[in-house]
Image (cartoon, rainbow over all chains, first blue to last red; front, side):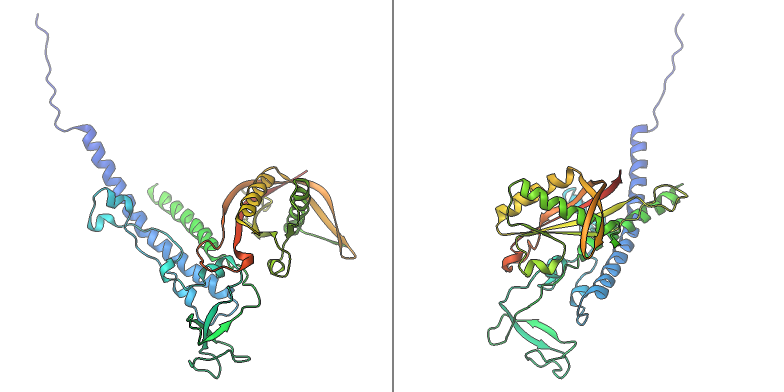
Length: 190
Length: 156
């Protein structure tokens, strides 16, 4: 007696379907994470700026705080994978871009004594209104402009700058905000 | 008579332990201090010890007691790059070996410590050269190193 035979036709490859579903989920999660990640980065930068403003000894220029921004970066891995355009999007976190920072960013962060060959002039203080000049006694609000030009004035800092550790503060803030974000995403997915 | 609270006890215990440890391990002329400006006022070479943060982790749900956790920053101001590396390695080993925690009382400005537990290093979060991106650096800032550690006090 012949055996009954059954023919099974596979309409689609289940492994491939599963793979594409997983890719879709992963892309949607990545998209949500990147959107939220940008918000986190903006919050972190705002908090670091507040921290610098409220802790610097002479809060008159804001140059350091203003130089810290959020930069959208192209992910290296995306480039290597040959992705293009919007697929390359990603938010990478960093605290300040060295090329945009004032020369003294590291002294404010780590503390120390700025070396003596600091040539430049004072501007913007009381009685100076932007003219090039030596420091005025009681000239609150004066801004030191480093030029390196030996025809200007020599600044010899007498006291060390205490470390502000704003990079460390930013890292801690980022950690705290990311934990909140992950908890938020987790609770939404339930 | 005055008594120190936990953060000051930690700083004083670390300063005591590191000062004794440096002498025992053959280092000479290294100051262990807590005031940043003192480095530039003559206390050089030196190790600076500061409790820099008090992370607040609750012991358990429903309780208002916190773990005795602190973040401690050690800054090394060395005379040469070799000394910086030696001190950084020595310091790492020393803090990982659990340091005696003492509680201090002061009488007429003199602080006396009594052993009360251990300072356990939970993790080292930073261990690197400082001011590595600045080209011109003042003499005392040339060979600086930072070690940052999360510690927990285990009372005996």
